[in-house]
Image (tube, rainbow, N blue to C red; front, side):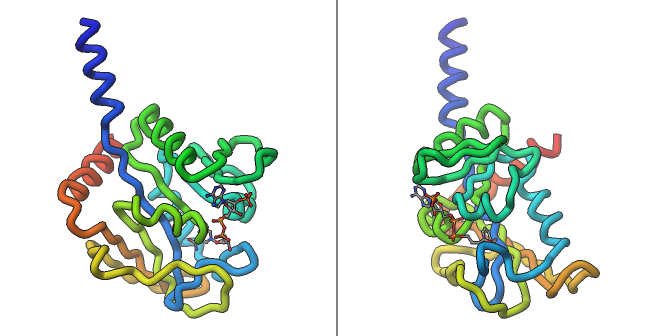
Amino acid sequence: MNDRTEADKAQTEAAPIAIMFVVARAENGVIGRNNTMPWRLKSDLQHFRALTIGKPVVMGRKTFVSIGRPLKGRSNIVVSRNPHFAAAGIIVAPNVDSALSVARGEALRQGAGAIAIIGGAEIFAQTMPLAGRIEMTLVHDRPEGDTYFPDIDQATWSEISRSRHPKGASDSAPYSFVTYERAGSPGNRDRWIAARHERAL
Ligand SMILES: NC(=O)c1ccc[n+]([C@@H]2O[C@H](COP(=O)([O-])OP(=O)(O)OC[C@H]3O[C@@H](n4cnc5c(N)ncnc54)[C@H](OP(=O)(O)O)[C@@H]3O)[C@@H](O)[C@H]2O)c1
């Protein structure tokens, strides 16, 4: 009985936890300006919530400050080199590895199946090799900015879905939801479908 429990525990610990990026990017690569987003897209806020709810979210300290509060219904893990940085409702991690390790533990504990990395540019740049999926909102605008997300490398990423939407009453631009999966990662897609199915139950 004890052996079985240990085996189950080992399997749970080895369970794959997918890493997804959730990013909104303008056609010129801009994702931010003056520590905020240079557009107003209420429709994307709803999309962002649907994608991330129930999953641990990992973000840089500047992104957390920009949001101004923890995101409800999600474990908020904030990366900062400042050992004194703290805020109610978040877990502060001193580096990216530690943040991902905490996020993985939270995902396993909550049966989440995936971790969402939500920016900003510094955190995206450091975790790009680990991401299996990118959920991108492509904002059909070319605003001025000071923070960028790189072009999607077509050799690394396969586009698996795209839907274009006109700008809504509370949106400053039309937008498309685009999903990319890392090319050549067999089983990645099945894993994502399984994770979505679990969440739907
Ligand atoms: N459009 C989008 O989807 C989107 C998403 C997120 C953010 N944004 C925008 O992007 C901008 C913020 O992005 P950003 O790149 O400037 O900042 P960021 O990635 O949000 O945060 C950078 C901070 O994270 C911490 N950090 C980074 N690497 C670290 C490491 N290896 N170890 C420990 N701590 C580390 C440092 O915090 P300390 O300084 O405290 O040490 C650093 O100053 C804002 O304009 C925001 O609105 C846009």
